[in-house]
Length: 298
Image 1 (cartoon, rainbow, N blue to C red):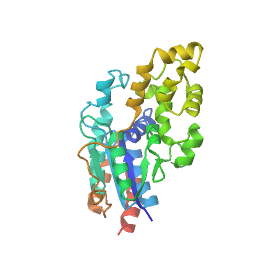
Image 2 (tube, rainbow, N blue to C red):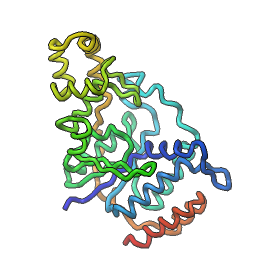
Image 3 (cartoon, rainbow, N blue to C red):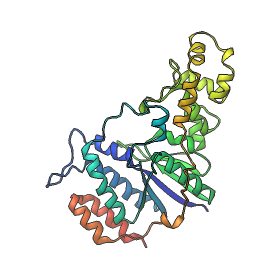
Image 4 (spheres, rainbow, N blue to C red):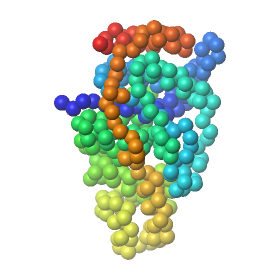
């Protein structure tokens, strides 16, 4: 039986937590905004209690905004607003919580993003016989799905968790292989990251092209079979399509990173440390859930 590794994609969950409480932020009696922290902490504890992982880690973006994607395309994520102060303030507390639970965490190295770090860890762990669950709200990870790498979408707004494997990705996007979602979004673009794609081509046509041609490269080789405005848009924006595919592709071989399983092993936490940070954050209900985990882990 494969060993299970759970990788938490930190920032989408932290942002989701922050915006979920934006109209009614959560504050401690001392005025600390805990909105960005609470859902992440719920997710962490529920995963520990329900999935009982032996191997786990949380991945953050680099502390420096120097992604190679930004150098390739200066408009990449250009529409993103500055990180809210409440989130910046919350990160040290989240790291402190991870430390108290003895859950490892990593920041993506300079020039890369958390997606790339997760992709690199997942592929190296897969090669060592692990079954990997990527806990995320980010659809970009669908491209990494294999027999042994799955996307774990946590419960949100009353929904149940979803675990997406090869079958689910194929059915969701009408592709033959999860890797083809890279070409799919390369064609239609991705507004959330300001990735352009081919102008004027939406999801319906993008799916049709992938089903027929299989990739952006083969679509470009066959563009003479098309006609009308779509043909013109593709012919006039070939380089934009190829660039979009490159921007969307998650790096799975960050140099000088090696998967050492001992760094990911879940160990029994220190209860006094958990109690101290949870009391500071005034997480009364969460403290009970944390104790349930603490008393059951060996």
